[in-house]
Length: 589
Ligand SMILES: Nc1ncnc2c1ncn2[C@@H]1O[C@H](COP(=O)(O)OP(=O)(O)OP(=O)(O)O)[C@@H](O)[C@H]1O
Image 1 (cartoon, helix red, strand yellow):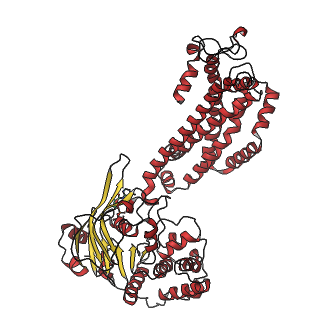
Image 2 (spheres, rainbow, N blue to C red):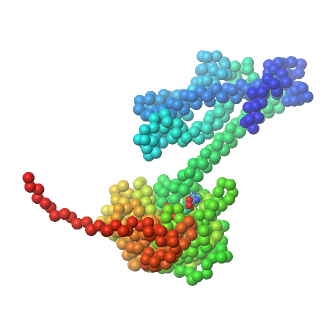
Image 3 (tube, rainbow, N blue to C red):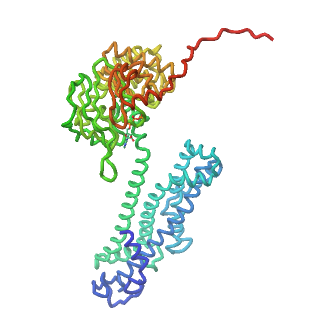
């Protein structure tokens, strides 16, 4: 539609039956005829000709306003955002000043001073619109400037111009295109508004001037309003749709690039207040952050070929397949029919190299597959109950109470705005319906259970006041707070130093013994498996290639992939002596 409107305006001299100002008073208000398909206006001018020529002026004016706004706003925003310093301060000050001016008043004043010329008004409008581009670009560039990859580019010797062209422009280009479409719509509407109010030049045909003229004759020939109104409405609608479509395309592209990391359940908790916070702490993992419930589980059906071997009492997967919908309408399967069992009181390691499908398998049990992902077929029994195909609401009720989750990065899963105690207490108040006092007491008790010294003080601390190891214990305390039967731990020790890792593994072992918990431990660390797990399932490329007791799999691997995995462990180096403090030596001269 935009292309049609623009082409019609550009080709106006060839398409229009006559000049926009040619009039024949005898034909005033004449209806449509073969020579004048849209009829004549109050001065006997051909409406079609005025519409086409008016498009030239209206759209041309908007192009001038836009070009000026872009030329002023974008380079200034790039420079200010990238360099900062005095230019940034001065530019921000100027922009604040311009934005504080009421646009309509400035336009009216400009007309009084510079004369009633529509092009001049569009130049003034361009200056007034430039700050919106400046702010948009400056904000994005200032963020990108702090990214590690920009530092890396600087360190590798790239010039500033090259860094801006390569790393910065690619990020701001999308928002600029969207903003351009929106500002174009605003420029057209403002210009038409000015003409309608009679503030424009009046001598040139524009859609606004046509509206003005039609409005003056609304009693006599209301149909005159139709054509300029339609042209303005369609142009603005087309621009808004274009902006929306561009945003969808560009967001989709960024989503595809970053979606996987962004949607991992161990990504930072969104700033959604205590509810979201507490869910991370309890292991009641929040639903996918994209805001849409995964269509996933609803369509899952136990596969006919699901294995028939005896199924474990706590967690039992048969023939579980996870697939992601692709943009071309096809499905990409990332987990291809996994069978897995965890019995009560058992710790099962799910091992495999990065990308082998461990997390996708765990997420399918938790019902938190990222957007686009779904459990396509398979059966998942949790404490004997089939949860494949469960609605999101029912799945949520299971999380925390029956299945709890311990994420990988403890610090990013605690909200810096709340104390440890309140983050632990909130879910217990909601799920277990404990009073504030009972929940606070139980939070202290839980911290004691996970061997945090002085728990009465720790509950009052904020996450930045505790260590990474302590934060992981807090998350474990949260995970067991609502007494689940199954813990799913995703690389729970990866972010911790070796000594703390060993303590956390001891803690998991003790919890299993005391509470009879079953644990599914997602890891690629075979040392952790050897230390902690009773049984192991080895995954490769979305399939379980070997299962067995930890002893069997680690000492007598049957599958070539497992053998490769074990061979890749650098264990031939002699173990270091345990660390001991050195005896103090006296230093003699
Ligand atoms: N949102 C997604 N869309 C499409 N494919 C995905 C998505 N998330 C993961 N995958 C694919 O699923 C496969 C398995 O990923 P998964 O996260 O389960 O691996 P993993 O074994 O847990 O690896 P890691 O140890 O690195 O976390 C990978 O090939 C990955 O590319």
